[in-house]
Length: 323
Picture (cartoon, one colour):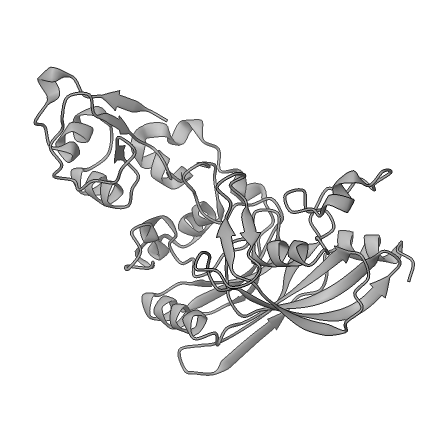
């Protein structure tokens, strides 16, 4: 990421004016929005646009930039919108929302560490007006237009995207009140004894590994996380589960299932120790977790519900398993 070290002759400059002189093809208003969103930092910290530079300050830019944002910085020729090569199936569309089947491998929105093309780039290209639809209470909202919830890069399935601000606000409120229905299917290692159950363990980020971990017992750290599961079918050494999320924490399903000794098949980040050490493992490219069901109220308060069948590669794998 480009960075600048403030010299003696640059001391006292306003941050926004300084960046305007350094970054081509971008307006001062856009720079100010990016500063407020944390795109440009000083000494690793978010500061206001009117911050006055000091000698030795280090300004880092381009964090969080999406392909569309990079295009406004004069870099559009260098970035090919690979997201357009993904088959993004539209399951339903109205003037207010869009329900899609997100493919495996596609990142939903840009992050601090990944600036590749994303689902957001596809949305902006197909629906330019969606740039105005975002969470105005979140400083990173402008980077996630239309996005009310997300799926991990390696997870496929149903997502709802808001096309208007009223729909965005309505969906956000439904997620907050746990009205939204989100169901997943997951194939996990091991055989479940229980037919159904609930995992209630707070989730926090490990300072040691950077991955999410489920906390056991009462803890003042971490965020509340609740996952319900129901056995769909048992196989030899595997179990197919229907998962219902009551909260939406980062990697929640993957972390919770690992915490009870049943990591998801194909999950390379969250594996139980016995799976990591197992010899003669089957080479599996994709994680066996996908968003199979989604339900929400539209702006007329009518319930909308969508279902999606297992991808073909799922079906082929399951056919070869022994019950």
